[in-house]
Amino acid sequence: MKTAEPGSVRPRRGQNMTRLDTFTDAAFAFAAALLAISIDQVPETYPELVDALKDAPAFAASFGILLLFWRAHQTWSDRYGLEDLPSVLLTFALILVVMIYVYPLKIMFGAAFHFLSDGWLPSSFELGSLQQFRVVLTVYGLGFFLLAGLISTLYLHAWRLRERLSMHAREAFDTAGESLSWLIVALFGLFSVSLGWLLPNGLLPFAAWIYCALFVFGPVFDAVQRKAARRRFD
Image 1: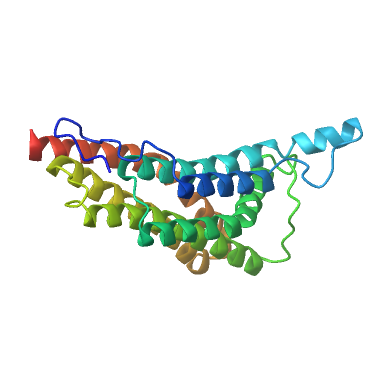
Image 2: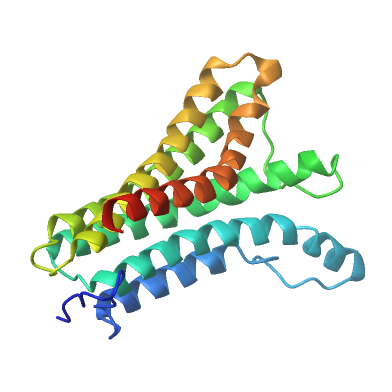
């Protein structure tokens, strides 16, 4: 195993692809395939083609979320190169949740674009009541919480092995920061679920749109972490 270089803040220890990496990539690729446009049949007429293409925004957004978690795991594997039992079990748990998460992911984005387009973009999933929407929102939120929480736990596991990995102080600090940031991201899922059951019917959409706040959280947390690192190590 390659040890950390003192001059490198984020050394690469997992430069060679392992069987775990290969399996993870294949699993995420299969999950992305489940999101594909017109997965049941190829369009045979122009109206069918148009209807299939209307699914593109929901597919793209869902694919983006899968790519986010795939990239997070790839970065973790590249930085630490771990393939011990806890790393394998956590990765398998991540893949399991991804496979289950695919369907509520597509449903939620389909409903979101259906709402934003005032019905022009299709949503193949029909809800009979707001109670059913709360349940779907809960399933989505719990899936999001588990995925982000597992990424956080992977970084925490790497931080616990900081001596074995020969981490210098700055890298250990950044690893702890990554674990904390993904934990906060995971809590957005629980926050959304809580809002879904506490908000009145008229404000229920806010429980789904709360995830948009992550676009602000990410850059702010990175800026705060970099500032804290400069104060501590420079």
